[in-house]
Image 1 (spheres, rainbow, N blue to C red):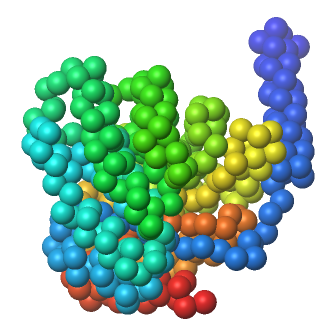
Image 2 (image 1 turned 180 degrees about the vertical axis):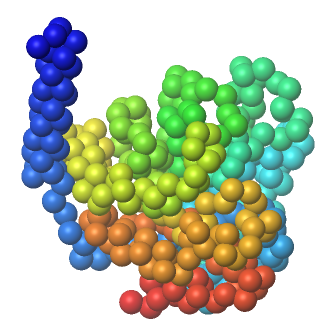
Length: 344
């Protein structure tokens, strides 16, 4: 046997051995941390973004009220976008958020309120034009003032349940944002706690492509994303099904592990895919194109998968689009399917 073949044989055995060890470790982790089954009681909620609803050609107030009264949503994740709340420096406009919080309060709805610079919905960092040219240090100072103003305004709201500080701050490769500054994130959280010690802070992270190690060292409450079909814009330019890579026990193992070692107290799904992942803005895509990543069948499949993970709280992502599908595409299925979650 020549040396090349000999070394290849040795290498192949090493690789097989490592794969075997990995498989054994996965099995052990599953046996210790991965068992779950459907939670006996599941809480369902949704995110809502007024600007996104408007971008879909919807009346955002009408859509919001329909979500609360027609669908029956009783848990919300709302967002205090910097460019909406502070369109001019030191001149705040809380009108849209006041409306959302007020209507939630009237109905006894619990709210997660996301604050900071990096918040849900592309491009993640919603920086107002007046601050776009500021240095990182200057932006941090302005964000501190923004957070202070928002917390003071809503800390006494009976609807408030969590403050979500930033959105997936450890997912640095996604979004048009500055790199994570951990010390600033910790100062943001500390500032919120000082201003409002009565309400817990929530951080979010990718359910799929993050280890949660970083976030678990900063907050004891974690909200994760859960996606089943995405479009890979950067490399393959293809739709990728996460069903092939992330089974239900993948999420459960991580959650149980961090909870058992005491690094996390609460873990739930703050962003469950309930709208298409587009190759371009959804209003520019046909119904058939949108259905590639999210159809009525996929909606039902995502809900069934979510149940199987054993988590007991899920916030659906894409409620605005359900009404777009009904009003603009003539497809009521998504609104109807969502209603069934709150009728159980």
